[in-house]
Amino acid sequence: MSALLSACATTTATPPPAAVTPVHRAVPVARNAAFDWSAERNRIVKRLSGSSEIATQVRDDGTLQLLLPGAEAFSRGGTEPQPALTASLDRVASALAPSPEVEIRVFGHTDSLDSELHNLQLSIQRAETVAEHLRRRGIALTRLHADGKGEAEPIADNATEAGRAKNRRVEIVLRPFE
Image 1 (cartoon, rainbow, N blue to C red):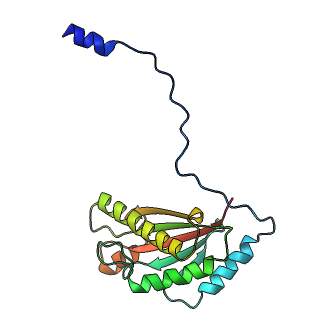
Image 2 (tube, rainbow, N blue to C red):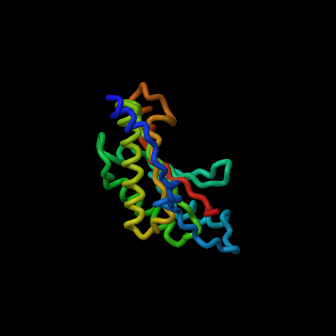
């Protein structure tokens, strides 16, 4: 037994690991010196106005938030977008296609009916599905980021069906590349 322990305790000199290059790196878009984020934000809002399925809001930090209600966007526990959501996403893609200087962050949210881990995984999958839909509609992958918030950021009371319906949503946050 001591031979076994001593064999385990022996050290061999191993070279330090080589620097690891990240597999996924954001590819920055060349910043257009003449790019006017305020004007571009207003153009996007105007293109999306008139849609009852897409709410727009300029946030305090200057980013533009698009809110897509999710109660009818996905089937219960599902990740495939329903026709109403795909129509809204097609409209979003059309509005964003001519803006390569704009970064698109997609966030999925759920209600609190299932476990926290399940809801987080579901929200991530839904955000990735939305980002993939936008990519298939011509938005460059380098502009897209997807993440899920699960049940962590409710906007309504999860104790009622109406509140849970409001919490099931997709948010898209737009900002200029830095």
